[in-house]
Every structure is written in structure tokens, then in C-alpha cells.
Image (cartoon, rainbow, N blue to C red; front, side, top):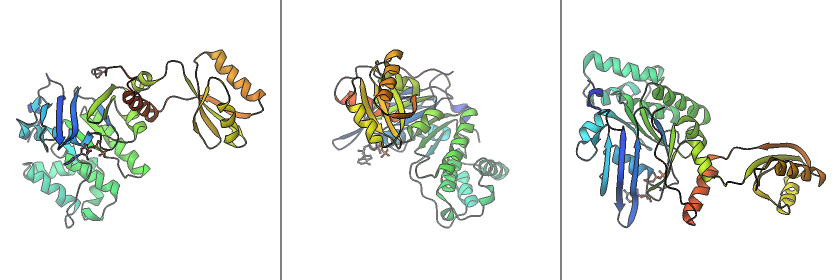
Length: 337
Ligand code: ATP
């Protein structure tokens, strides 16, 4: 069984144009457009209810749009769903196992459904179990596994037909840090194999390091796409330096000082101090702020610049869209490296 021949590589791996999906009055996808080149790993980010799952379900041929167009591997998801399913691996955000099936039986069931027969089926299941490190659990009932093991089984199921394109909806949700690291490792290997991956998550820092680019969606519309650095840059205030300051003594002392200091704003209190925004990028002004802290009696033990967190950048972006001060149009996704 081969799926690769059917991908039209002259077109992007995934293309979405002006996609619409309404549930009554609610516009869950309200003109979503983006394009992903072959071999790219793209993070899909947005608040709860922003429209990620709606968009992904349409791409996975599980729902129909009310308007617009979506293609996977060059095939229109509405007109050629069978072709799309053959070349797409889909991992939903919630997934049920069958209570009385072992890991092996479960994968065997799906491998048969996909059309694998005989030795090829046995080999394919073994490859998937090895990759997801489920071989030692082959005889384990699938409802007697940890959340991390269950997610690996779900990923294994999505990989059975060796799809070139993967859509993973919140694969790391509910996993402990160790299981997250493990899942991230598997996704990295899949990316290195050249698969195109669209992955949604709420953990922006995690996506930032794993993905070539990030796609931000809000209220059913794409509000930004680009890499993590461009997100930080586009939303950064031009004249601002973030610094993390630690002092000996209660953080309240530093906060009080910052509230009465020109050019200094409090971003957040931390355990031993605060994250501050200095409204300048001029080195002498930044140095003078530190000097003033010390002469005003604060015992500073640490003062260092901070990179803007993606979370903060995203929240700023949403605020600026709401108050109409974000005028930028999203740049196109960067092409293959
Ligand atoms: P989350 O991060 O919480 O999973 P999401 O970005 O995936 O959120 P969607 O699941 O796409 O968001 O939902 C977008 C909006 O559409 C939400 O307001 C949701 O309640 C609504 N919605 C989704 N599916 C349906 C449905 N079948 N019927 C009615 N409303 C729906």
C-alpha cells in the first residue's frame, strides 16, 4: 500500500483560502487563509474557541466548510476526501480507545481498515510500535495505559499508513513534563523525516522551539503567521527594553520604586523581584535606571534583559487588534529553508 504517489508536490502541502464554518450565528472559521509548504512544521495557536479544531477537522475531511476552499497534498478536501485521508495522518484532541482491545489488536484493527494485508501489515504495525516505543506494551489493554502511552498509541494509529502530512490537535494536552518531552522527541523525528506537520497547542514556548513558523488564530481569523521571532518583533513596542530584576528584600519595595520612576513600568511581580519594562532602548538610559535603583537603596542581586515571551507577544497582539492599533497584515509564511 502506497500513499506517496498521490501527493501533488507542485502545490503547497496544505492550502486554506477564505475558509468559513458557521454554527448558527457563530463564525467558528471566518475567512481563514494560510498555506504550508512541504516539510514544514507549523504551530497553530489560539485561545480556547478560536477556531483551531474547526479548521483542523475540515482539513481532516471530518467536517464541511460553509465556504472557501481547503486542499491537502493538492487535493480539495470536500471533493476528494478519500485521497486526502490516504495521505493525511490525523490525531484528534480527544480520542477513545476500545476497552477490551490490546495495543496490538487496536493497531491491527486500524491497519486492516487501511487495507494492509499479511506480512506488510505485521511489519507496519511493528514499525509503528517500535517508533512509539509501545512494543513492550503490545499486550496491554488500551484502557489500562497512562495518558502519555495513550497519546503515543493515538500517534501510532495516525502514522500507520505512513502519511506525509500530519495534523495533530493538542497532542501534548494533559501530559506530564516527561511525557511531553518524549512526545516532542517523536515529533522532531517525524519532522526530520520530512513530514509536513500542523500542530496545535496552548503552550506557546513549546511550539516556538519545535516549529518553523506559527499560525495565530483569533475569533475564526488568522491574525499573524511567521516565525516566533517575527511575532515578538512585530508586536514589540519600538522603544522598550524588558529587564528582570531581583533584589534582597520584599519584591513590593521594587514595585513601589518602579511605580514612581519615570520610564519604568511593572510587567509582573516575580518571586524575588519583578519584570520591568524600561521605555527606552538607549543603553545609557538603561544603565541610569539600574544606577538609580541602587542609589535609592534597593539591594539589586540580578538585572538582566529578557526576551519577550511568546505568550506576552500574543496577548499584546490580541489587545492591539481589539483596540484597532494593530495595522499590520500578516506576512506570508516563510518558504522552505
Ligand atoms: P480549544 O482550544 O478550546 O480546543 P479551538 O480553537 O479548537 O478551541 P473550536 O473547537 O474550533 O476552537 O471552536 C470554535 C468555536 O466554534 C467555539 O466557540 C465552539 O464552541 C464552536 N463550535 C465548535 N464546534 C461546534 C459545533 N459542532 N456546534 C456548535 N458550535 C461549535
